[in-house]
Image (cartoon, rainbow, N blue to C red; front, side, top):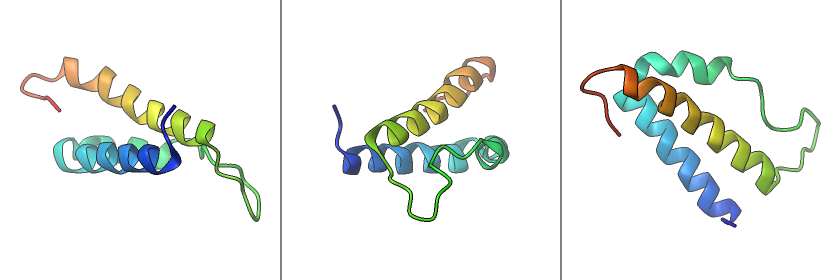
Length: 72
């Protein structure tokens, strides 16, 4: 299993890729349900980070094949 630092790096990488290569998808990132607990002092778990990364990855996997010339 990846560490929190590795997952955060993956999230940053995929978010930057979306914003630079597919800016039209940025609006969907902003509209995504918040994946972190809605509490005053939330515990950010590896599970939360992994689920968030997977949701970003899913957006790309669905989008890229349908748009010619798009790749990561």
